[in-house]
Amino acid sequence: MTNTYAPEPDAVPGSRPAAVTQTQPRRPAFFRSATWRAFGYHGVTLLLAPFALAYAVTTVSLGASLLVTVVGLVIVAAMVVAGRYWGTVNRSLTASLLGRHIDAPPPFTPRRGFFGFLWSGLADTAGWRAIAHMVVSFVTSVTAAVLSITFLVTGLGCMTHWYWSQWLPATQASDGSWHRGSMIAPDVFVEGFWWQAAYVGVGVLMTFVLWPAINNGSARLQAALTAALLGPTAAQVRVRDLEASRSSSVTTADAPAGQDRTGSTRRNAGAAGCHCHEARGCPGPPLRR
Image 1 (cartoon, helix red, strand yellow):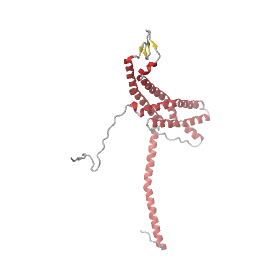
Image 2 (cartoon, one colour; image 1 turned 45 degrees about the vertical axis):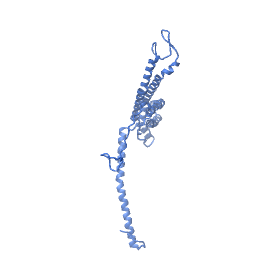
Image 3 (cartoon, rainbow, N blue to C red; image 1 turned 30 degrees about the vertical axis):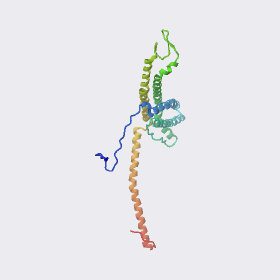
Image 4 (tube, rainbow, N blue to C red; image 1 turned 90 degrees about the vertical axis):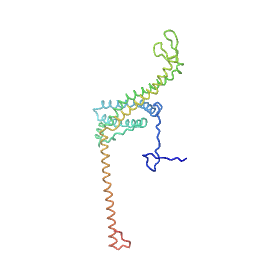
């Protein structure tokens, strides 16, 4: 028996048939690595947020108290410029844990002289935006981390309540009876099969549905805040694109001119060599014209 293969109408003669790609079903959000990276991002930002807020408050308070002195202005200008490093740290965290790359703003280029640096530092837009991010991100980081941790721990606790509730201290109801389950209302205890099954259902809902949505949604909100305050502005992006297009145009225009100059130099050298052989009677063979 002979097996023949008839190519599809759209197939190119001489090419192999296209491989059939099978789309694998996506795993639930709870089991994805991106969800747990976002959870780690919330933990790291929760630890950094108090230090960032203290830095921002110190910068503003020093600027207000030492505004009348030149030394105070220099300290404030230096702290504003140093606030750029906060942006570097946050952009790195966002790229490594959330998978979102954010371009850095243009580098700080101070003017010449003492007062040039002073006014450049005080007018550094990227530094002030980083300080604003320190204040705003304190609220968003604490809120996101508390919500994420609360929903995860509560969901896991509800799912396993049937097991660890046996070690709870006994509680006496108003009728004198003793109970070991969690009391969710006056004289209402989570005991028995149906109460425990309801608690498991609530735990599954919070752990596998609500927690990933809140965890990942708050992480996207944090990334959007980082891009808005720690990335380049729209005007800076337009300037960068114009400079890139201008440099590309100059490079393209210089390439043919350089080739013409090289060819002209070689032709002049050949002509000079030919005249040398004719005038001096050099023993070598004359160059071809």
